[in-house]
Image 1 (cartoon, one colour):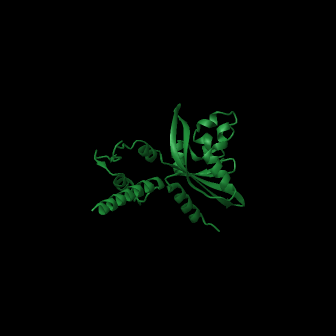
Image 2 (cartoon, one colour; image 1 turned 120 degrees about the vertical axis):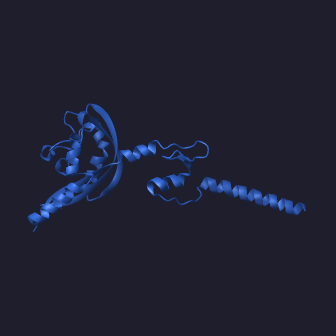
Image 3 (cartoon, helix red, strand yellow; image 1 turned 90 degrees about the horizontal axis):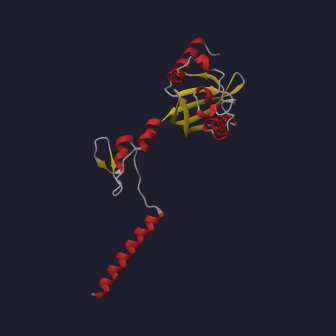
Length: 206
């Protein structure tokens, strides 16, 4: 049996998560949300409950049908709805990337997000934990990275031009492994064979 103290701790952990976290049903109606979600939505938690996620986050497509979220033509390809649907089938979706178009203060806004949907059961009711991670800042950085059109070096924040491996290592702690694609392998082997033939020819001439 869960004690009041345990419930308080679970609620505190739930609200401490920095990403938007929702508990949703099969129609993506919000049954619960964490503090980060309520803060971003600029709404009291109890005002968003029982509403569909698209309507709460002001998805542009939720305005395309009088029936709201999930009823417009685009909604059939919605990553959030598809992920929740897969979770209700017992499949866990982890950090699937998507682009979401929202209406914010009357303006269209695009955000990039990672969607995670995990199925669970509570009081004999099937539900899904839906997590939305905003990665717009990271996505924007990838979109505006300056690359030299000749040597392919990248310009970093210090205005220095560095190799692509060094750029990603410095900024994202990403290491690269190196190999040959099939086309480059053929090209390099052709150069080696040509060099061998030239050496062989010089030897025979002597």
